[in-house]
Image (tube, rainbow, N blue to C red; front, side):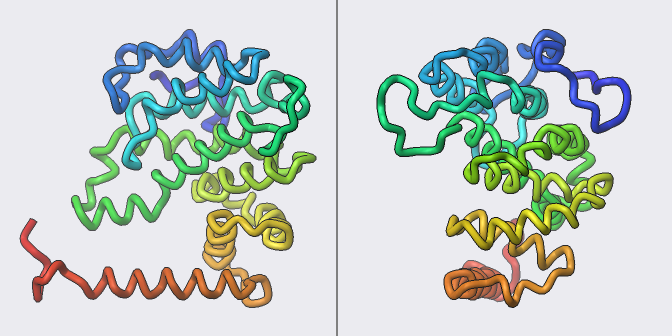
Length: 260
């Protein structure tokens, strides 16, 4: 896909992305992206059941084993372009005459969560691991991963307005997506504002994944998290530290790293 003109954080309109991408030429986990534009278009359906089904068809082919595929970046840009679409932002509370037990904005939350998970698969830690395993040229050779990392400012531009959403599930999902995106150097000035959102999440949410992510981010940004952790946070941090130490010391029964 040809990068959009203008500033690197400029996000093209959804229809421009959908119609201007050669989907059939892009790899996915199960072939090419030929079926993706139809699935992505159905995410704007007024029927929440159709949108729910479209989520699987649009995101599933580019979600497998923490891999960034050729189709991942255009799908991510389309997802970002849809975050403000009325069919996605309207919410599903009370629709269909039933009582909802999940989020009021399930599709919006799922899209944000997918962006966050994909951004984590392309973060600095993943690059560092790749360089340790495959050498310093890892990122140069992994064109798809590099393309996603280059697109982070454009993706963040769509996520940022949702950090102040009225619903906590949307705010928290937006923060989950924003934190790995702001590793991009151009987005460093936004980290101070995200720290405020992170403190709010820690005061209101007990989601283990969200809490671990924002606590790690705050520490990486130079904040003291001592007064922000609860007993569960401390236990989770210590457990992760023990696992990391065990992985570092265990070499599969070899006294040295095996030669493969």
